[in-house]
Image 1 (cartoon, rainbow, N blue to C red):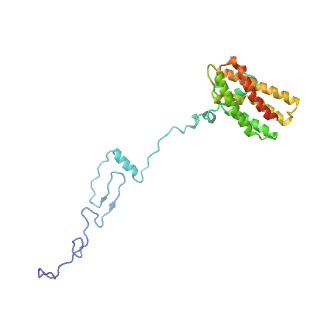
Image 2: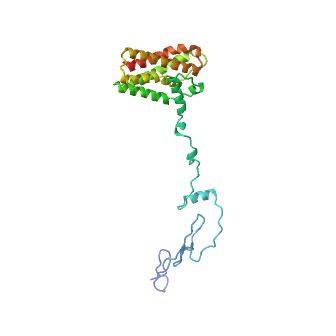
Length: 259
């Protein structure tokens, strides 16, 4: 009973201040019961409810910030950038990309095998592909004769190339030579030693015939390598001074091959 009036009991109200039976009133501008909800796609479109839809506005150009927001929305797919790396027809060969010139490799091998003159530019364009193949062929021929000396071959190659490189740089007056070219020239000079190792598979080299062939191969390798060194660094007057230590290196390889 309302103590301040004689009108009877006071009406009950809800938490929102509405009278019983009236329910909670929807907020102003909300969705009215029975209204159809319409959805619009696009970053600048807004949904309208029922008949309260505002008139559609013309699309305005999006600013950079709006474009970034549009990219974050689901359903937005950005076209991948077009690249020029799909032109496989104009790509260079794989050996050219790796820096391996097969023509120069065969020209150096022919220069060693047939005592042919090689252009100075080809000698300066050194590589280790040919010497690596030659060293592997030497080790494989020795393996066929029952000699497992891979470590000796690689160790002697590294030591001999280092010593020859230091010696030539001391003797050279116009310009030195780097270790890379030294290994290239000495590696190609091993071709006669590989031929000797291949002969050792069939013929016994511990004989007078083997001694004679070994001397020929040592002289062959020394002459070609010293000529390559003299051409590469222009020290023709000191060619035979370089030939002596180079001949010692090839003599060590011959001793490994024969014995």
